[in-house]
Image 1: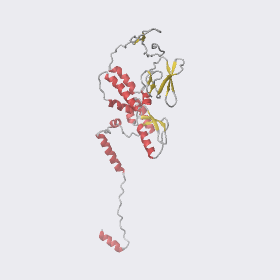
Image 2: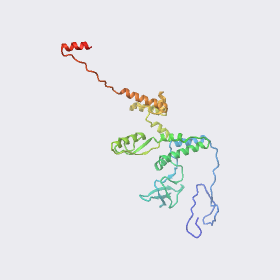
Image 3: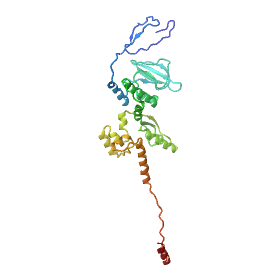
Image 4: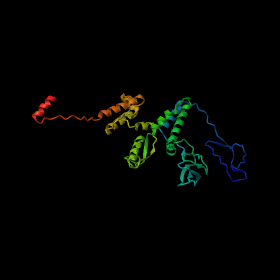
Length: 315
């Protein structure tokens, strides 16, 4: 729509399926209806319809035709189009430009000259949790997961505290991928526990060595459960034969640090009063291992007969 007396266009982006009510070249006034967007018919939804969505979130599955998010912050411009695709260019204040080729059938939600921040949506679609983690960070991912899961249960009037969802997300983010090994024993591209990496970096820092750099990794709950250090916990979940065979062949040792493996073997879980019990057992065991050296009093030796008589009287 061109404003009267100028060549400045006013752009209106319409979603797919919209019905345009005006013809090309037609004069319009303020308040005229340009297009109608058909309303979706309301469907009866229950919790069973929302559970597949929850499963997709906790398994960290990539959605079909996900939203395209900005890799860097900068100003939007559109370059030369190619066959079936339009070229979108992001120009930062400093550094190299970033280009994206977007299929023409997809709806671009930004316009020429707009300034965007890293992680903002360029093309409409379902958000990919892996992209959110990579571009926005762990906190943004936790908020996204919590809101999406709560939305499913909120429709049924079910109240869930966020901490339950956050505990699951924390387990999904246990692993990290090594970017640079530094002077540690890791390899580039290796997947290790976050706690293990922090311990190795603390040790390297204490010895004035180069620390390892990493990026967080998002695993689905199935993969995260099988990737745990405890083979007893992993075997109780899925693929029992494979997990136990692998543990036997490689000679793994389970330190029984988690809740699940302690329940399986019938021990107190290391939480609450059970934690104090395990700490006391650990302390006593290490005290028992200490070797106590007791100095013995030397036995006197008689050199002459007079000395022998004196020793007999003393004894």
